[in-house]
Amino acid sequence: MIIKNNKLTVMIKEKGAELSSIVDNNNIEYIWSGDPTYWKYQAPILFPNIGHMKDNEYIFDGNTYQMPPHGFAREYIFDITEQTSSSVIFTLKSPANTKKLYPFEFVLNVIYILDENTLIIKYIVENLDTKNMGFKIGGHPGINCPILKDENFDDYKITFNKDENVKTYHCSKKGPCVQDEVGFIGNTLKISHELFHERVIIFENLKSTTMTLESDKNNYKIEFDISNFPFVALWSPDAPFICFEPWFGHSDFEWDSKELMEKSTITKLSPNKKFECVYKININNQEV
Image (cartoon, rainbow, N blue to C red; front, side):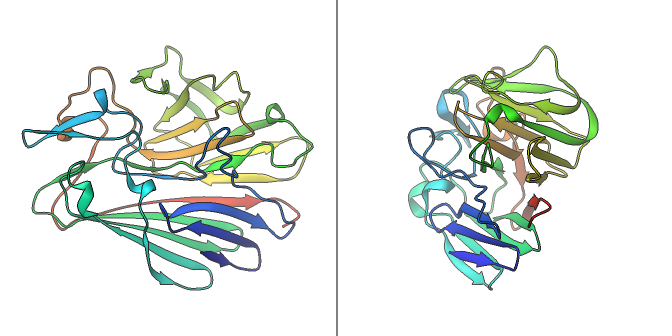
């Protein structure tokens, strides 16, 4: 599925409603290719789980359910329920074979809208069940880094639009979420593969509304508007890309309950209610 305007061309796959390309008028590609040598995904949607639950399972209403890391939405084909030349809505209605994993009736709508140099991404979760549902949801877009081919990963930095003094956490590939002894202070994070060695870095309750990936060696920048997300994660598996991940929730702590509705970062949604969140990707350079 392709949407476009006079600034950007965007491709999204029906499987997982997964963003697979953002190309500007200079033919610069910003989204990771999905090379399975490093990571087969490009920008998966994480729902109804983020990271790992303890023992990859949880309890609801007295029953124990298995829950894969990052949930299951990324593995399902979404329906295209509305589209224009510059926008599209993808819809996933609770598949029958997920009831053994997740005993709720729900609708997940994923909306992509192009507005000049900005791609707006909205998630809408609707509880169609007669009982309260609990979930985590977030984005996981992989961004090419370096953006230009004659540069290096270490040439880049992430700038925050406000000075920060926040808690940070880290998660190993299969381990629980652990708070760092020292959080993040400042407004600039110099990135390197050593920084992300075998771990995800998670920021909690940032004051900043934007985070920008940029280099002093070129004018190409990619800015993420992550307003109102309680957590933002960064990850790179020693590969030429970095993931910016706005999240509602994260992996369980070691002390987290196995009861779904008692988990520390779960979002609770009443019957017939909707939950919405939005983030934006802004391609910000002088040559677009």
